[in-house]
Image (cartoon, rainbow, N blue to C red; front, top):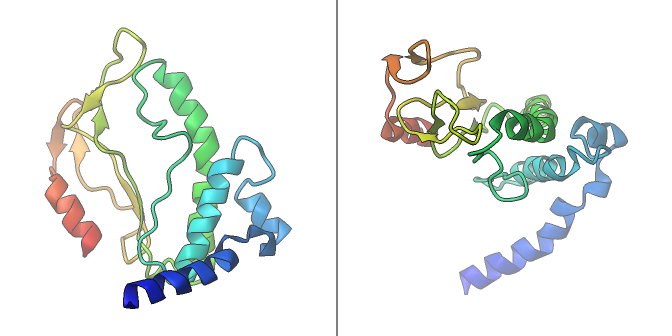
Length: 174
């Protein structure tokens, strides 16, 4: 019964959380909602902020469609395209959380399932590579500008301070 009651309360509250018309024109612009390139992901980032504001503990934001970061061909173009769609809204989300005092208690994690090969494949893409990868974190007491670990010159292997997936997840959960 408690689960049904919780579901009913969530449904009643959802209209307010997802109504982005209540946001200012300045906020819409900051998240890129006026630009067709950034609009879709910007809307998702703004909804994420509103969900965090309303007390939702875990929010995951994906760009559409699916996982466009998983580029195995023409990586230079594909990565440039997805960065153009996500950079502005992501920056707006982090700045907005900070301005509202929510970044102190919110951890923003930018990561993929693994890294990319240091060399392009025959399709000008980069394939999966589990030995070296990058993750960015902001908020929740994560030190600003910290870099942990280093790859070799070609990003093929870890040069110093290896961090296991288990350690990454333990850090996120902490």
